Image (tube, rainbow, N blue to C red; front, side, top):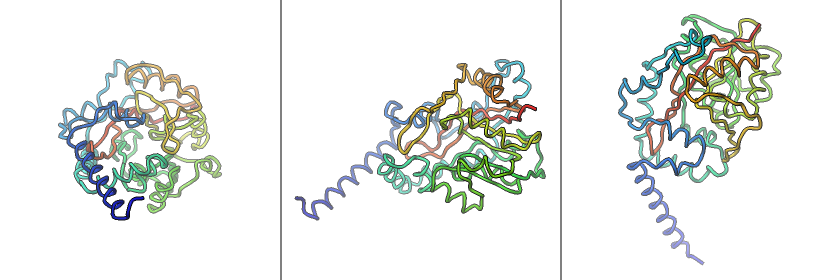
Length: 324
């Protein structure tokens, strides 16, 4: 049996070793082959490798070749660009990544609890991992609204910590949200958003002017069923959905600390961003009764960690209306 003093010494030695490994990882980027989860691996393969980015490099995040889009989709494409709100998010992410002791604590907590708690819930507990999908100006341009426009009800599905909900919510009198993770629910409730259960929002007895489904389609078990439910929950005629999806399309579902394939396989055809956007627009959305009003290419940004100041994936962001 080890004495209490020996146990304390062994624990202290383990902590020192753990911190040393983290610091070494901070200095030398890990190889992608050691990234085990599908999301982390996808992020690693697409992430920015130089945090001292130039505006020219960042503009690649928004690049699209309209000639490669389908004939019906081409005139609906909206060209976006790096703006002040996006730059501010990136700057905050760089600053947070430099908080050494905070990052050590986050990494230690994640290592201990990741086998039993989802990554989303861990981020909710720690108040980290905020996402950025679009700025207020980008949102207004996509929906073709001005700063004074007001709608009645917004529903943000899978709202996370509410960072993107905040961008949209200023345009609506009532803001509803859904979220599976309890810590993220607490954050949404602190912001006074009306949090609905994931099986409740379709049966409230009222409909929504806008439903946002941001980077959720490739993370749910039944994506086509989700799209049909959204269509039925929109105000007829004027209701819209804003949908963001990471391309290339790699679906999986997070259960606890595990990643599994969804029950319903949504096949998105094409190899390039433009080909997959065209396939989604002309086949997948049409299949469930939606038409595209606008589409743009935006970076899906996430706060970084010990290894990287921020991560970026390629998003296609659509504004959809139900077929009459």
